[in-house]
Each structure stands twice: as structure tokens, then as C-alpha cells.
Length: 231
Ligand SMILES: CSCCC(=O)/C(O)=C/O
Ligand SMILES: [Fe+2]
Ligand code: NI
Image 1 (tube, rainbow, N blue to C red):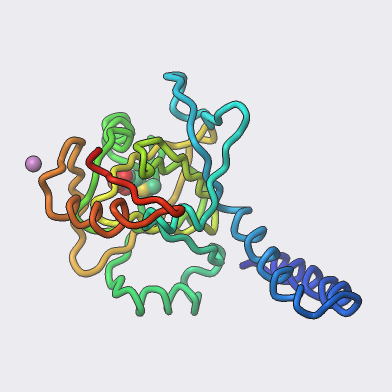
Image 2 (cartoon, protein in one colour):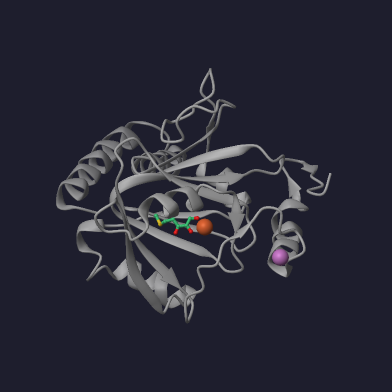
């Protein structure tokens, strides 16, 4: 988080303490969580996509817009954080996440014609629906882009990551990536041990990673009703 973010966060919190003073104290934890959700949603937003074949770099909102919360993403195994992208070299929060989750490997992937070899081919491949046998961990340190993931009912959810957003796509989730119309992202790539970037284009349902993903996330109770991923 940058200095201006911190100051703004502090001002909002002080304002809330004033408000909280004048109302029942039980409301305070609720107000506090609203501030945090607003802050992370400045850099990560998700929504259901429309069915149009238009330019993949457009937002593809449905009409009316249908947003998806970060909690709904977490139910699909998609984790997210907001970090200080201006300070990734000395960020204690990033260090803690890396230690706790065993992310020993780190490099950067810059998606633009000048920096990415075989740019056109890579752009095409990133947008093919695929899965990996390990987590896909990306921390957007500059620019922005869309990670699309399938929900319990095979609908596409578009996850917009901007500077400061870190996401983890679980092993076995079908997904794809595209730049947005700003045409640039620089992402930190993290991995447990030696990296394996192999994409398995859909269908690859026989892979153990896919079966485990279905068992862990798609066949669980969700929103009060059991969902059968194979249906
Ligand atoms: C922004 S990193 C490029 C996308 C990528 O590495 C990947 O595997 C997409 O699924
Ligand atoms: Fe991928
Ligand atoms: Ni295969």
C-alpha cells in the first residue's frame, strides 16, 4: 500500500471511529470490514461475462452488470490479496504469504510485444481455456489484465486485476488470461519449488489435479445446495 493509500485509509478509519462513537458499538466491526472490502476492490473486481464474441480485451459485462464477490471467488478456490506494488522488494506481507504458502520461486512476466518473445502466439495461448497441475500465482505489479475462471455451473467469471492485486488460481481450475484494452501487464509469477508452466487445454478432465479440484471445490455444498460438477 502506498503512503497516500495509508493516509486515506487512516482518515477513513478515524472518521469511522467518530461515527462509531455515536452509534451502537456492535456496528463497528461491520463498518471496519466494509472499508477493507472497498480497498481491495479498487484493484480486483470480478463479474459474470456476457456471451458475445467481440474483442476479448473488452470488459464483457452482462446487462445489467452482475458482479461476483471475492468471497464467491474464494469458494471456487481463487484467493486474492491487495499488496503494495511499489514496495514488493521489501514487503513484509508478501514475504509472509510466500513463507506460509511455500512460494520459493519468483520471476516476472511482462506482456507486451517488446518484452514477451512470440507475443502473438503467447497471447493466443493464454486465452485458450486450460488448467495447470499446480497453482497459478500472479501478482500484478504494473498494468492490468483479465483472468477468466469457470464457476460451479461453467459460467465464465472475469477477474480484473490491477496494480497491487495478487491472485492464486487453484490447481485444476479451468481458466484463461487476456490483456485488457490498456494492453500491458507486468506480473510477478510465484511457484512452490521449480516452476512448471505447462497449460493443459480443455478437455483434460482425467488429470488428478482436475479430479482433486472437482472434489475440493465443485462437489462441496455451495450456497445451500450441493452442486454436481460432472452434471
Ligand atoms: C499475466 S501472466 C500471463 C498469463 C499466464 O501466465 C497464464 O498461465 C495464464 O493462464
Ligand atoms: Fe494459466
Ligand atoms: Ni492429457
